[in-house]
Length: 79
Image (cartoon, rainbow, N blue to C red; front, side):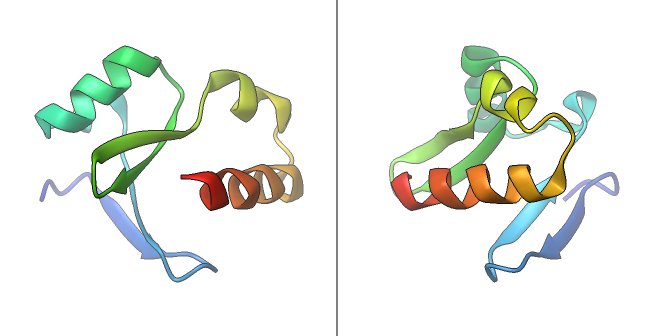
């Protein structure tokens, strides 16, 4: 794992890796990012990487953490 990856466990006890676009080394992640565009929140499922939040959803949070948390919680239930 690259030194640029900062891992943590969120309030949902789910591991996250925060990556800058130039830190993406996994081909499957790169493919998912290319298909969806940036910014994006991806989640790993049994079938591979899935878009959890896309650009429009992230922009709808308008920088508000409480809104981001709400849309992330809702979206994660559907992945």
